[in-house]
Amino acid sequence: MQFNHYGGEAARLAAGLVNALPDADLVPVLRAHGVLRPAPDAAGVRELRRWAEQGLARCFGASGGRPLDGLALEERCAHVNALLATASTTPRISLHDGTPHLHYGPEDQDTVVHVKASTAAALAYVVCSAGAHRLGRCARAGCDTAYVDTSRAGRRAYCSVRCANNDAVARFRAKPA
Image 1: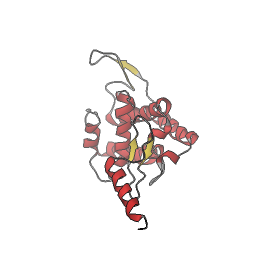
Image 2: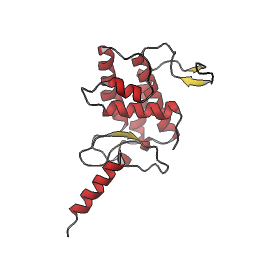
Image 3: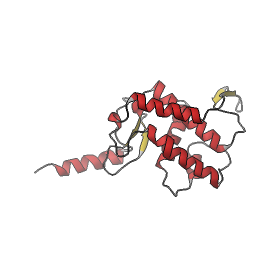
Image 4: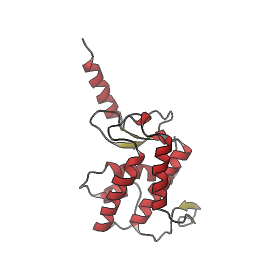
């Protein structure tokens, strides 16, 4: 499944922020997902952590969850709507690179405001254009990684091939001989 830059990369940024360790530097996470604005100060980092922990995380389903059986659609939409209300900015058409495209706020907005608006809009885009089930948590026991399912079939259950393989090996070894 192909998403546009905001629907895909900003949704993956949301997952990246949710997956960042509590004491990890968020700047590499932001840079890896195309946020090239000035790094947030300490207060901005705290605000982004709070945004990830109290808002974004809820959109990916329960921790240690089974992603396809996660939140009910209504509940997931309510979570995304709450994020949109909190991060509301005025979308604008930008021509900064010569091609018209959508920005979820003014180009000179603060990094934290930009990240909040972009991630909220991206999760809404994924839910509306691809389906809420595309936001999930890894099904492997002990892994709590949030992910955006960009597979063609949309039935991904693991955050990575490694987790899928580890889980398959564990299930095989657990079978009685």
